[in-house]
Length: 129
Image 1 (cartoon, rainbow, N blue to C red):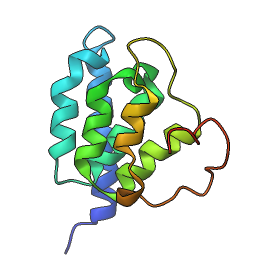
Image 2: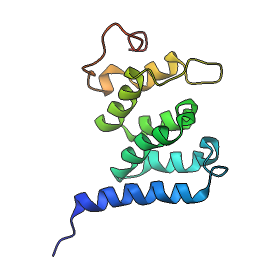
Image 3: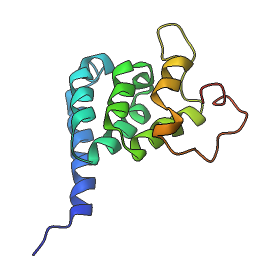
């Protein structure tokens, strides 16, 4: 009997996120998880994209972490590009000193490496694209 790969994917994602919750708030600071972000960028598993997508929903400080964007970029998949574009179009990236700026995002979300997002119009995301 073959294992159900779709179920193992969601199990691996939730197991990773649950393990992070067990670390507690001090150890889950985004800057302390740079090694994890690097590993997720190189991971052959599609679960990595789901984990990367979930992290900023749990802690918005990941949106200021350059290693989080680098991990998505390193994945090099349409799904990873879509995750980044979804956050851009939601206006999730704060424009503050030390944060990720429009120039960094525009290099990470090059149109030739990502499909055009249907929600991009003339809103806040337009200068980045």
